Length: 402
Length: 223
Image 1 (tube, chains in turn red, cyan):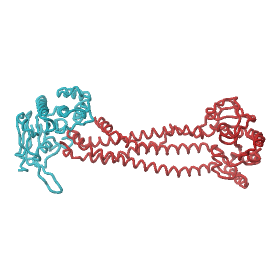
Image 2 (image 1 turned 90 degrees about the vertical axis):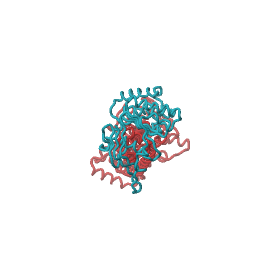
Image 3 (image 1 turned 30 degrees about the vertical axis):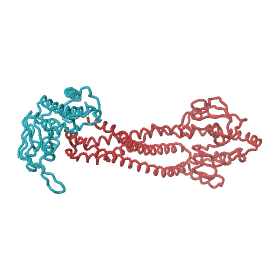
Image 4 (image 1 turned 120 degrees about the vertical axis):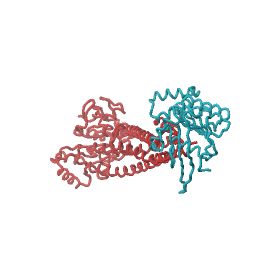
């Protein structure tokens, strides 16, 4: 019967209780979204950092170098000479060196020139095989899904890293493999061997001269046998330091530790996260105040109802529990809806980031901290309902009966 | 039997003690129908609250159905009230958002004597007796004044109380409806073999009672 009483009370003041539930919902949704998104984003970044110790690229922003080479986000800084690739291949301190070249796209999906060594255990083929010949490509799962490209299909690349450049019509790429989904930015790119890029740009030089149009990046200079970056794995930490130092002596390149740069990036992300989290916590505090005032005014309005209940035989504990249960119900509805909507929003956002950036964010991933947020929100709400409940507990029932 | 002896009821207002009720003795025998009369503020409602155990006297004893209420804890008095006292108010004091049935079931939930099925069956039975069986699931806010008081009567007797306390039960009704309701209350008290105590200002109804007590004459505090 108490549950019936609480239900009727909540439904009888629909607008007021809806607004209270809404304020809790928004606060919980905000906190959970921030916690969940930053956590998933960080783990994505860490996973994508891979196993490479050194990243070699053109001088400039190290963050831009990491983002463009490892996440295919942002434009590459510039190209570096092929000689660094050749010398590192012969370096005994180096286990593996993988070239990365970029400058073209197909329907907005970047075409990455690399070598077959790039495909470590993280990658597996869903269909076909890895490229062996110039012009052959292996496509990421998102690219396959979004473009409809299948094994054996041929296409021409477009100049630039986004849609809208002119088409390298004379050079045809052929799809020989489709990768399984990795839930990384690799899903959103097309891989070919570095020689393909050199060849297509050799051809495109002639085209560009005909069109008298020159653009920057690989096309703007003598691009043949140039690469955008090198991913290097060394034999030991000591060798990593030595190779980095050796490479850093050259002014036309920079050699960085990608993990260190990503850590710095995460520190920057943390600062943003702290600000947003603070805002979210302030908002939940305000929601608790809203809940407190709602329950306080409800308790004052309901003094007569409480008195009637007491006259009918309800004891003080029962009426105290009635108010507390009402607060708890509102808080739980608000918190659970906030949790649910946060995850729906994260799921929708995850679809967008997966398609556009290859960043896997799942709406189903629940962080432990979210449970604490839910419990915390409910505890705070119950505390907010305690004072009105105590007021009701102390009500002199005989004063309001007529 | 209701027995009040050597009652002294004092309130404190801004540090000043105010004596509201001083009464040597009051006895009401079982199954009697008694009317309390007297001007406003003479202590009628205070007496009701003492009999129901809502309050305890500053001094004196209150015995209802051989139970000394002053010796009980507040929680025990609440349970006693749920099981032995039926209240009817001038303002009906029903829950307008609840249905007729829910309003009547409510005191049974506090008496802790019945299962949910029993509660619904008993409530439906009582509502039939007061002529409200056709509106069981109607919200109380949609009812007329007379219908509301019928629901309130059903609620007051659903726990089969030994004592029914009615505080100006016809005060908000017109003459015709008031007479009908008072008849119904008396009939229900007779059926349930309950003692009926009614506060009334309606002199035309006084001959319906076995005894009429003028509290003004009993209360030594206001003499």
